[in-house]
Image 1: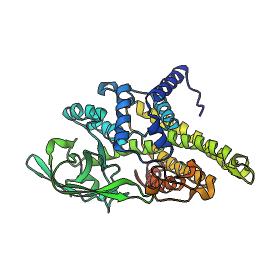
Image 2: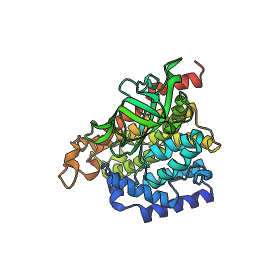
Image 3: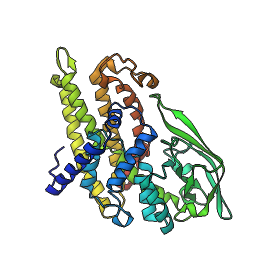
Length: 396
């Protein structure tokens, strides 16, 4: 996607490409390309490779060990990783908790947790959503009652992505009941190995174990694990969510999906000719590419604001809506392109060398499509994002 890069930016792109060629294990890239679920070992291996290169903390401020990448550098890195079929960087520690600690954490928390995020010693998951508090997060009921130098936590979190691998969880908990619901929420860092924590798997519609529910029963959390001030966690939660929602736009991954679909459309035949020659399909593909270029430009503009140290505002909600819609659209186009070969199959039957009645690229087309229906819900549903835009930008 040509966005008129400078010579320095093109040199950075070549640097990233060389790194990916040298350090991305082919077997892991093959898993990503075929939408096969990665193991914890796969994620850990790639995490360490990025950390050693300094890419894991590329967007971080230099005072915290980062390289202060520009918005364009971050865009280039994510685009090249997606095109090379590199695993996504698990965002919870690097891209979500780290900015919160850098902005609101104590010096002790920054010195202790940030290096452990980069080294992989801590694998973080997110404890936000609850069975009755997803899009309406302020209604959360998980309680933390202070007793001396500890909080006692009781409650439940759900949709905890990759929580089966995590040894740490950052949680929103209710510490006060006065005033508005948002005013009684605090932000806690919790060790997953603490007695009283139970992780239960949730199997998704595509058959994969990706998310979990986490139960807390009289879990003791040291007071020093409170981030910022008690009852002000809603402020930190919103700051984190703006970073999460901007990332959900997934421009790099969507572009990679577009390039894969173009290749498929040249090889997949329909009525005796390549699918790419079908006028209706070609028009859909062209329209999608135009919208993707527009979103990429807007994404760069939005992330550029973060270069000055401010979190994105309602713009991140706009990106979240458009990005999730476009990621679902490219999945739908891919599923339609392979036709009957895209019938869904039980994920357990797709592993190893078991027979699949169709070309390799069609094996998980429906699984990916079904799994990514969730994108318009997590990180704050698209309906909620439209409400934010209406209030913040239109003043209604």
